[in-house]
Length: 186
Image (cartoon, rainbow, N blue to C red; front, side, top):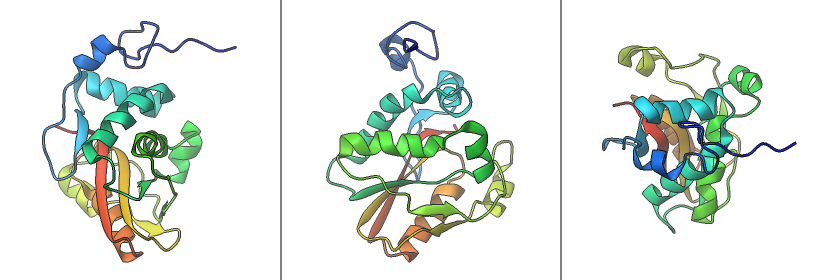
C-alpha cells in the first residue's frame, strides 16, 4: 500500500515540504560551508523529519536547493560524510547519503561512497563548540579519489565534520573539495 506524500510541516498532501511551507523556511546565514536552511524553527523540524522520522521525501527539495548552491559543472562526483554504523542501523539509512543522492541528480554527476567513518564517537548533537572540535568524527577514504568532489552533510555547526571529511578526500587525491549542508545552526 502506498501512502500519499505529505508535507512534514503542515501535513497537507502533496510535495514535501509544500510550497507554502517551503517559502517560509528560514534561510541559512553565510558561513564557511554553504547551507540551505537555518537549523532553527521549521528548518530544524524539516531536517528532523529526514533524520528521525524516515522523511526521505524531503531530500528531493533539499538536494535540489543544495545543488543550486554549487552550480552545474563545478564538481565531478558527490559523496557524503557518513554517520556511525550504529546510527545507520538504527535508522535503516544514512540521511547524508540520501541528501547526497538527491544533490547529485540535478548536478548530473555520480554519487560515490568515498568515505568510511573511522570512529564511533557518536553524535555531535548537544556538544559545545570546543567539544565538537576536539571530538570531530574521523574518516578514511574507501578508494583513491580523482577530480573535484562535493561532500554533503545534513547539519553543519562548527564545520568540524565537513573539514575532517574534506581533508581526507584531499589526501586521497581529490583535486578540489567543496562542501554543502542542508542546514546550518544559527
